[in-house]
Image (cartoon, rainbow, N blue to C red; front, side, top):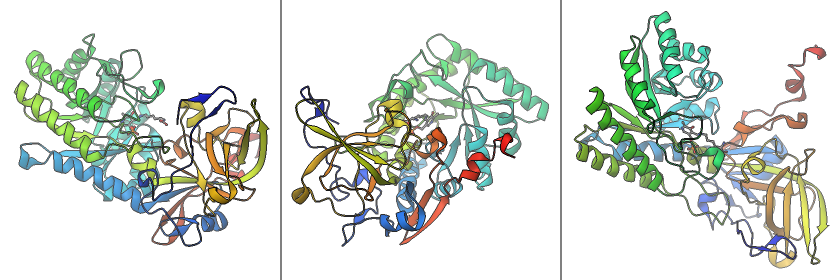
Length: 474
Ligand code: LLP
């Protein structure tokens, strides 16, 4: 969104109309279109049908979009790190924290990806969905014993070690179970990248990873090599989220490989694999750049890996990535129904129209938490800006606080009215997965749309679900 503001009325200047799917296809799920009646359709299903036959609010997931994005990532990594070019292969693991359900896990796996998990819940879901444990990774800066036990029992692909404490913890559990734990080490590369302070993860003064700068990383690898029940697979780096361009990723790859050379020289240790994390950004509004295509990221990484390995005389390791947002984010929209509408006079005689919808910060905390910007358009009819004029709106939820804002500023047609449907694009990543029951609202469900048919893949919570854990009501 434009930073420029008119001090007289504190409304941003310029047009803030949500781009139509035909204008900015990257903002919308791939199958989104306006049908002959002016209704938005996803997967061949009109959003009016979703609102009527399912519910509002609802997250609507475009199956073909999600599958396509997963395929693009896995094939880009396979292609760019192909054996035939002297590489030792490339893989992509879907970061389940962005949005996970059994359907999603099965879809990304069927498109050639693994699944990266970061808790007992995510790992259990992936396993119960039937994901091959050899395709599952486990992250976390403070793993519980139960998480490590399940990872080792199931025989997952790799556990990412995040601290010296964890070397001892995993060694103890693996020793007790009589197994060997395959581990990688998460590094602090020193790079500060990402859209928001809270989602940048590789600078020194934050909780993730072990520092290269103070020598901790070397000590952790040494300790792993000395442990009887740990197998050192390689190194990991995740530098942050919602990153634009390829430069920061490329720099991280260089730093990780420089450290691989140091491990060889100082400890005689070979790094067989590196994982360069997730973080590729997406567009949320018409003001955001069109995102960097995965193949460009994979190609830039491959070029850097080739170059540094050559310079340092290193064998090329297996390279993987863990994209989340760039797969789930654009694949979903949220559909809300418009309720109360209130015009608020601002200094200078201008008006801000508050449009209240039937969800809010419980289904999208990102604006309140990160100042994230979204946009929205009418889903049930063609927006008629010419006939009805344009009005600057703020989309707010139904929670008991004034910071409950889903969209700060968006232009909608002047005839917007109660009962209209609003579609907010790019809510697939960290929308449902960060949803809450604030004010005891039930969480909305997720509808999957494909080939003209729709079904719940996560049903909406009921009041009974919500009250089920209250012991005093039993
Ligand atoms: N790998 C690791 C180790 C991660 O910590 C993350 C995200 C990813 C991969 C996936 O990153 P992505 O491709 O989705 O950017 N809740 C925040 C984002 C937090 C990201 C946490 N880690 C948000 O809503 O923007």
